[in-house]
Amino acid sequence: MNILQKNDCKMLVLALVIYGIIMGLTSAGMLSAFWQLNLIFAGLNIILAASLNLINGYTGQFSLGHAGFMAVGAYVGVVLTTNFEVPFPLAILAGGLAAGLLGTLIGLPTLRLRGDYLAIATLGLGEIVRIVIINVPYVGGAAGFKGIAHHTDFTWVFFLMLATLFIIKNFVNSRHGRACLAIRENEIAAESMGVNTTKYKVLAFTIGAFFAGIAGVLFGHNMYILSPASFTFMQSFNILIMVVMGGLGSMTGSIAGALVVTFLSAALASFPNARMIIYALALILLMFYRPQGLFGYVEVTAMQPLRRFFKKGGEA
Image: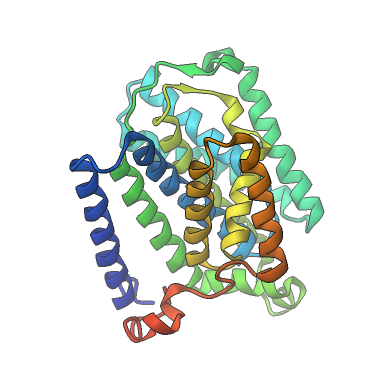
């Protein structure tokens, strides 16, 4: 597989143009602090949605514990930078590796389960991580971890988001990704054809957990107090909503779902009571009229207006 395909280069140029526009608007003072913060949250949500989509959308597993991996990455990262003065880039890597290791250790026994049983197991994992954090005074307990250096900015989030999308996209288009897709379509048939289903499910789970941990480190260093209340079941549910809304098995859908949820929440921030009602109605309408999500399995490069531009270089 040619990693640096033409489509990758075209998408990179487009992303850099978007980055330049946003930075230009920020420098000109045309973006308020509120919308700058929401752009950071949008980038974090894209990382979280893409990593969960690898597990739920491309591999066909049903995980509800993504907030737990995010929490592990966040706390490992802030402890390293605050208590041990580890450089921020190394803390990002360490947070991702810690979450990925937990994903491997948890995935080996739990990914032998399927469907609702797996969802319950991963939901329990996320809650166990949160409760352990609450009961560990070293990381601040229920009051939260204080004194965090504010390292995260839009540049860090944007380029790590690009790296996440690039790596997951190329993983999906590799033979390992095709094995994951075979498991999603029919696990029994894939196993009968010689696919080591447990190995590939754990691999997808580990990669997804790794990037959730990276998002957690970025999230933690965007806060001055990191509280375990940020990693409840509702956070896992919000990430799942982004994936389902955009389309299970679509990287473009992960981006679209994350952007819609982030900016819809921001736009309705002044109406906290109506926000959840509108949120629920939007999901209900989507399930009625577009149950496959906004994009389904379709990527932006396969859409008719852009097909000629991306006609060579493989799928995005």
